[in-house]
Length: 237
Image (cartoon, rainbow, N blue to C red; front, side, top):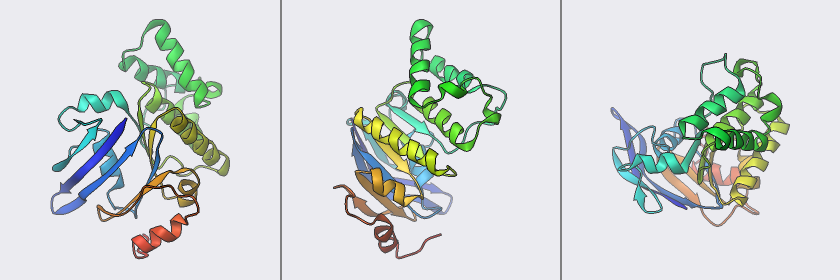
């Protein structure tokens, strides 16, 4: 599975949020996505997940445009936003079960798939808790389970480690490794560069919506914080 972002551009009025952006990722990759606040990361990820459309450019999955055929992305892409919905009176299990049904699971297949993702993300011990009662780390586990429920080939994660304690951050690094080892393409936006430095096979750095650095040959032995500062000329926000 290969994802290609090709000359992607998105404007909001006079503001260019994403400006002629190109990069790619493939099965088994863990690609970090880094940039200052307001650099266009979330806008890019929303377009990759078909939650928004570009003004120009394209996104291909194995050569097929998901701008023209968004249903392709919805089968192959799992998107983990940095928030859970406002509904607080449903349990973690009910939330995951709802999305599994929306993807067409039913009967024994539904029960098996929900249990499988709950076990993988360690949601099983908290499956009967309502969302409002969960800690930040628990909510992130539920959000990951929801993104994985249809067994996508590509996982897009928007700030998955934001607000997590050290133990939960370690857990998410392990989840990312397991997903890549299973042949998934993993794309992670994060401000925690040390975490990305440890697990990523590559990194895309953007500023003001434009690509400023694309590291494609691994991060081993590289100081990502230093590379980021040099690429963005130290303009950390």
